[in-house]
Length: 211
Image (tube, rainbow, N blue to C red):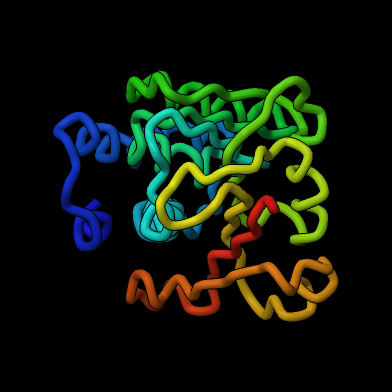
């Protein structure tokens, strides 16, 4: 938890309580359903919570913004972002039911009322539109964009970035970006320039605007 407070200080008592409960909850659920790698569970706040919040460091969602988390897994980046932005509505989707069960249990246990968890592939979500889509290490950029672009509405619900896709990725992304055909509009930030931690070497925030 200290690593989160190293970079963010302006939390309410409720937010601090919600963040502080995550470690015990994820350790409990990880023993039953493996949603976080065993080697990472002891670095939950750095590798999962703070990593997720690199999106918040770049983009301050306005109250009422609608965000979909694609392939949320155990709830990242959606759960930390939902704590950070209590007045923003999050739909967390995953095609694996047992992972969505963990997301729902964690959200309920910490009293997150701005999260809806659904057992669904993002391409099967119908009748909904969103301002932003977020994801972490789910699929190649071109596939992600094909899935979410129809769900995104044009506009700008933050001062920093117009509506679009914001995803967390790692490694050499040059070929993936070129293969996506989005290279003329993609923006990228190195996470270790946002949070100066060795764990974030070769980790990036990738952004594609909804034009």
